[in-house]
Picture 1 (cartoon, each protein chain N blue to C red):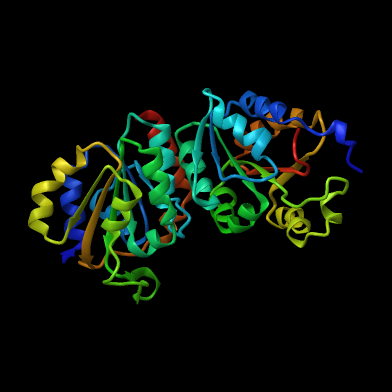
Picture 2 (cartoon, chains in turn yellow, green):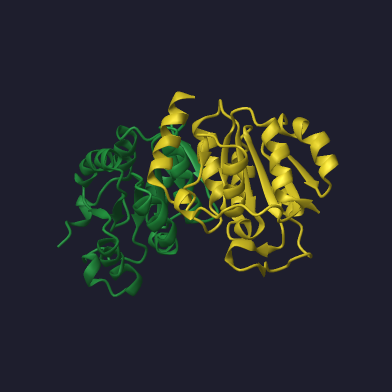
Length: 188
Length: 172
């Protein structure tokens, strides 16, 4: 298992202007670790991050789009794996932070915790490449190459919570941040 | 009362109006009302990009992502899918202020009635739900109704408010 914020810090070192679509705890942590105007927060919960990312990837094929999804979130929108694989955007990289819990909603276990395979779901759906990391050193060594792969790419991060970051829900629902994202994307 | 069967709206005219709205991406799940004369022509039209989704709330979010890139899109679905997607529409389109353009087929709607007079509970509740959600809406029933599509969608984008056209009769 890896500490999620340590994973995100490594990812941040390889981040070179990609759009980042992030949900819940990963969103809070990414905003703290890599403050950037191209972070898309308005996903509206219920597992919709990957679908927003698909829209962004289709609309801006010149930009790479990174999704920082949660395992509980993705379970609410598993069909999006099939939709994404069907559309096959070359510029979409879909990370799932697998911690086996609904962390932000009280730490309850997700259905199938420890028994289901998100990598298996993505492979079966037809993602172009699928990776799974549970070791920080391996992740650190390989993530640079993974980020350069042709999408859709799926990356499972087996994580546990690391350092505590403030849960800034006002940012997630902020009209000002959505406007800033729109403007930053138009300029990029 | 709706017009006669001969006056029924034409699918090709709906598709032309969609394209005249500057929409190049259509996100859809098959709807039996619009399947033959709207969705199949869209699927065969090389000037339109059709994204087939597994569930309608995915479509709300895909259209949202496209909108942030400046690309106009349409979500085409059956009213059952609309009902299933209410939370996504509530959050992403209404609360997050998105000009989401939707065309929704009223599956099971009796062709000689108005939606509030339908025997189908699922059909009767659609317009009241849209009113409660403060979502602007209109009907596509007879020829000529398609002329309202482009202005309504233009206004939706300008105001960043969702808009729904309800197809109340299977287009010709």
